[in-house]
Image (tube, rainbow, N blue to C red; front, top):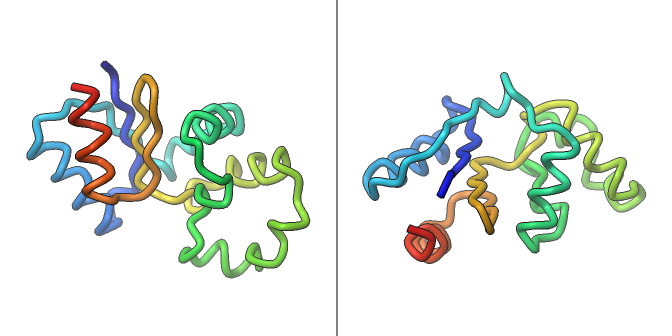
Length: 121
C-alpha cells in the first residue's frame, strides 16, 4: 500500500503526525504542502474518498483563512469554487493529510489514524 503524507514541516501537529508514522513503522511519501500544493483535481478526489464535508479540508485556524474572511464566504461558494480556492495555496489546506489506497485522513487524530492505518497494513 502506498501512503502520501502531506505536511508543512514547521507545523507542530505535522511533526507529531510524522513521528507517529515513523514510530509505527509506516512508510510514506512526504510532500511539502506549501511547495507542492495539491491541485483541485487531487483535492476533489481526496475529498470524495474521505467522506468528510469539504469544509474539513480548510485550515480554519490559518491566517489566510481569516484574512480572506472565508468563514463568511465559503457558504456562498460552489464546491468547484472551493476546490479551486484550496488549490491556490497550500496554507489554506488543513494538514496533515494522509492519502491511502482507499482512505483519506485530514488532521491528526491518533485514534483515527491507529484505526485506519493499522487496518491497512
